[in-house]
Image (cartoon, rainbow over all chains, first blue to last red; front, side, top):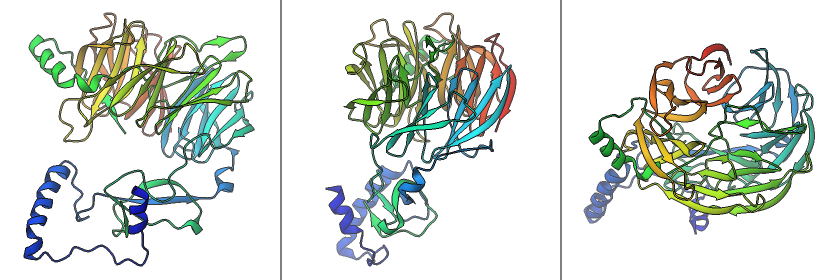
Length: 200
Length: 267
C-alpha cells in the first residue's frame, strides 16, 4: 500500500512541491487541516519546511565496499557507539564504520587497532570469536590476537535490508532513490536541503 | 533514540511519590534490557563470554547469540565456535531497541513495551509476558536486573513528552508479572548498570548518577555526580566502570564502588 503510493509520488519529473493558492472553496478544508496540523505537530515544529516535517536522503554504497574489512591503525573516534568488554580489551563501535579495539592492561587503556566493518553497529564476543553485524550479514572474526583480527566467515542475509525505495517513516519527504548509485544502506535525516519530490 | 532515565532525587514524600507513580506507571513497564553483573565474564573452559551494555542489541547466553533488529529477534547457535547457524527468527511485532539477558530470560526493550522471553529452551525463545507503556510519547530502553529487582530508565521524548523521565524500580519476584514499586525523577536518562550495591545511571544533564541500592527497591542517590563527559551507557566490569560517552570511552576505577576514580578518557 505504502509502496504504491510512494511510487506514485516518486516522479522525478514532478514539479517541486509548492503551496497552492488557497481559494475560498478550499478554505474550510484548509482551516481544518491547519488546526489538525497544529494539534498533531505542535510538539515538534520544523520552521522553514512548510507543511513537511522531516526530510530524508538515501546513503548509497555497493556490495563490494560494504564487504571490505580491514585492520587499521588506531585512530580517533568519530561517532562513538556501543561498548563491549572482553577480558583485558574494550571494544567500541564507531557508528557505521567499525570497531575501536582498546587494550586495558593494568588500568592503562590504549587504543591498539581499528577493525573496519562497514555499517556495523553492534558486536558480541565468545571464546575468541567476535560476531558483528555488517549490513544484512553476520560476520565472524577470530580475535585470538585481538590486535590482529582475522576474518572467518559471513552468514549472509540474516538481518533486514534497508528499504530501497523509501525511508521507514511516514509523513516525510525524501530524495527519490536512484538505483544506478548503488544500494541504499541507510536513510539520513537532512532538513537543510530543498524539499524533494518524493514523500510518503 | 528512546530513553528512559531516572532521577537522582529520591522521592520521599509519599503523596508526591504516589502522583509520580500514577504518571509514570504506564511507560515504566519495561524491564531488563541490560546485563550488569559486577563479576567477571562467564566462562566455560576457555570460552569466555564478554559483556555488553544496557543498550546492546547483541547478547550471548551459553551457546546462543541473540540479536534484535527492527521487529525481529534472531537466534544463532554458536556451539561450534566461529560458525554461527541461524536457528530461529521470532517476530516481536514492534521495533526493538535493546536486549538484556538475565538468567534464563531475555528482556527485550521496545519504544512502548518490554517483552520478557524465556530461553529455557535456548533455541526457541518463548514469550512469557509483555508490559505495555500507556504513554505513547514515552519510550523505554535500557533495563538491568539483579536478583528480584529490575531497574529501567524511562525517558520522555522531547519537550512535549508529558511526564517526567524517571528511574523505575520493579519487583520481578514473579518475572511474568513485574510490579513497579518505586520511581525516581531524572532529567534525561540513558543507559544504566550496577556493581554490588551501587547503581550507575547515565543522564545527559546530571552526568553519571550514583544510587545506593543496598535496599534494592528504594534506591537513594549518593551525593556526587560524575561529569567528565556526556554519558550514554555503562558496563561495570570487574573493578572498572566502562562508560560510553559522546566522544568515546571513559574508564573509572570502582574498587570502591561508591567513589569512582577517573582512570582515563579515550577519544
